[in-house]
Amino acid sequence: MSSTVYIVGAGFSKHAGLPLQHDFTEAMISPRDDESNPSEPLIMHLRAFIHDAFDHHKSSNAKFWPNLEDLFTNIDLAANTGHHLGSHHAPSSLRMTRRVLIARMMLMLDERYSTADIKRTKEWKDLNSFLGQINLNDSAFISLNWDTVIERRLSERRDVNKFDYRCGARPAEFADSGDMISAREFPQDRTSVPVVKIHGSVNWLYCDNCRQLYWFPPGDAVTVAMQLITRDEGEKLGLMDVERCARWQCLNCAKVPLTTRIATFSFLKALDFPMFEKSWLSAEQLLIDADKWVFIGYSLPAADFEFKHLLKRVQLSRRPEPEFVVITGGSKESCNYTYTNYQKFFGRCIKTTENVFRQGLSPEAIEAAI
Image 1 (cartoon, rainbow, N blue to C red):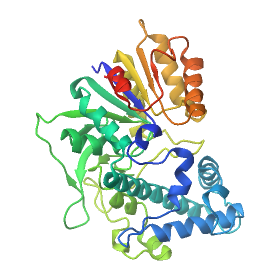
Image 2: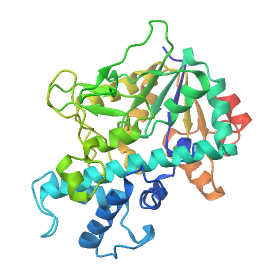
Image 3: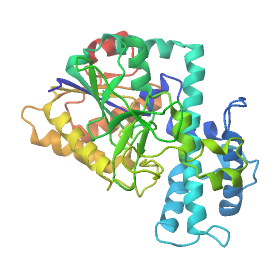
């Protein structure tokens, strides 16, 4: 049982240099100047798709692009029902574009984290302070993010490299040679931190045949991203090293390339896969067991209606209710918006002068959180 559960959104990962959702598109089409990073061909493909499907110039800035919910939802509605989206984009082409979009996002998140690791701003140090003080034996995380900020920072800050995703994921790693992944073993006494990711994670790969999910070291985002692109697609895109594409195979199923399952920004989140069902049940149990719910960088957006229903259902089923702590940041308007969302949704237990902190992971917020 964990007495404190930390529910984290994009604002939590912003401490580690990652963008908020409304900044994702701009970050996604601004690659790092790094020859080893395969982002440029992916970006050019996405720009061409936006030109064809949404009538914007290939060189258009992010402000002219449709929001990510519209982008993913239009692709999903057409591809998942076997329909074209315009004469040039057949279902197979749309599925490729979707994979390119996810791969580029994975690479972008890794780029932003690596840059922040060099700069180490005050926000970065605040995050380190928070993670350095939590009781690892009495805490758990529910993350609505795909990124691996929690894992990477705990690994460096607290020497934790074993994570319990509570969804049946097996630890694995990419072998030095060959095309088959390797099982990863940990000492029995190694500290394991529960990190439930209800929308998936950039360090997960899934076998479509045996339905086994694997998790990899959190710094392997580039390798995972390239696994999403087939070699034929890599050649079509003009990637320099197509041998990295769709290379890795399942431990159980020879010659079956691993892929990923991510609940994207689409309004049609595909949550009916085994790992998501297990993750949501695990999140529910953490919420039931915890004495304290600490929300960090999460504004309770309307699009997360499934998760909000889970929160409300568990809140109303408990006696007594959990203790609430809300940690937010940004502009005054943004903080007021977040406070209003929480106060309207959870009720009078959300008190602006008692358990709502508006300066991010400040010392006062950290003290209340732990």
